[in-house]
Amino acid sequence: MRGRAPLRSLLLLLLLLLLFLLGSARAAAAEPSPHLPAPKDVEVYSYNFQSLLRWSPVPVENSSVLYTAHYRTGFYEEWSEMGCAQTPQTQCEFPPQIRRRRWTILLRVRAELGPLTSAWVHTPPFVAERNTSLGPPKVNSVSVSPDSLFVSVSPPFTPETEDILHYHVSYWENTTSPTEEQLSESKTLFQIGNLKESTLYCFSIQVQLEIYSGHFLEGQQSAPECHRTALSEATRAGKIILLFVMGLVILNLVATGLLFLWKHHQKIKHWSQPPLQIPSHFEEFLRDPAFVGLEELHSPAEGEPQAVEVGEGGGPESEGPPPHPQGQGSH
Image 1 (spheres, rainbow, N blue to C red):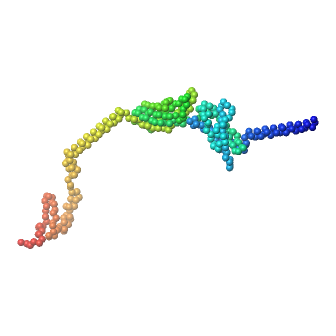
Image 2 (image 1 turned 180 degrees about the vertical axis):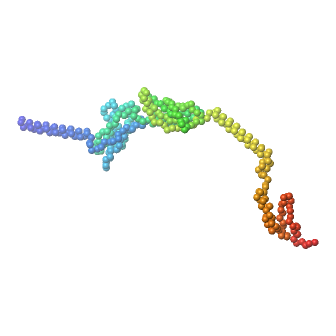
Image 3 (image 1 turned 120 degrees about the horizontal axis):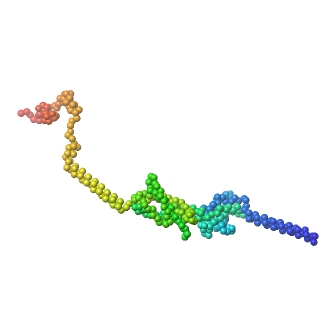
């Protein structure tokens, strides 16, 4: 009996040591390794209710790090797979089963490299109805009338049955100092009325989703669009009549002017061509005695034609006897 007691003690000690080693192995397998960094910049990106979990890659030299993401709702403590187990991608889309707008979703992601795993990185609670970003509505078409713009739009996301959407419209006249006016519509086809005819107006639209009583999730403003209102029939007819009258007036003025020119063309010709007069300085030069002596020195010789000088009396004066015809003898 005394020999068996030490043996039992030794076996008990070995059993305790084995249990301790097994517990240590399990703890080492459950706890993350401190040698692999955890992903950083972990966030949920959601636009028009299309949501995904994304993060920055973990830098490890000469190795490819994989990632695993989990999710759970606010009602359950158990984590579930997102369909992104050991993926090299740095983002993971939400699976269809958690695309509920009012659900509170919690997510986590970790890095994995062979047997090594990083610590889990958790995100804050995410509710799509409060945390998603809504884009601007799409303007499908714009029709104009003399005093209105008829606008057809579509929402930036596919609405659900219980969704209540409002379209907040800002519009203004395109002038140097525009005054902005606003209206709110719940239909996708609405009218911007009480406008001036043949005037350029601009508008921008923002969608608002009513999430609960008195609270809205506001979307982004659409890019401004400008359209000119049409002319009314009365204004168009008045412009046509005005152009016709102006044409008749111009035609009558042209006909009157032509008739006047035809009747008084002789007087107009006389007025436009006055009688020619020798300038006074030329007359003084011609009366100069030096000019007369120079003229005598250059008088034509016998047999040459003589120059005819016009006197003050207007009659021709010849100098000397007329030349004899050449080749004829005297009689």
